[in-house]
Length: 158
Image (cartoon, rainbow, N blue to C red; front, side):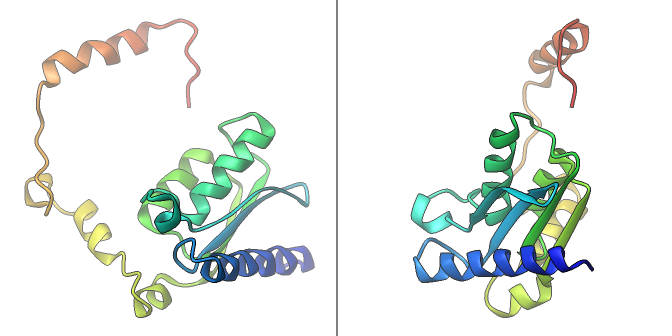
């Protein structure tokens, strides 16, 4: 790892502590760096915002994308104080940074009450076996919207 990696990871860890100290949410911090400049930073704000998607990585990604006016984080590195949860990992892959560096593992997070294993299990399992009833409904009426998207000449693909 480079010295800058250490500097930026320390900042992600500092943001995690800031979130804890401010009672914003869980003990997680993240930042997005492009060309050695922080373009987005955040900490977990789930409880303070009453938003289950307000994880540190998502907050940092939102700010970074706004800062560079793009939904893609090419040439960027995401630093996070903990291995991303399944939701954040999905957001990270959609944003497409070049690298992810994390400090604590998901096992470390589980030991302090943030165990995401059940979500990994739900994703890997059959839809019919999910704990939250999940029903395929009115697909025939929704498919034309996909067809409309597919035919749209000026769509921005991602």
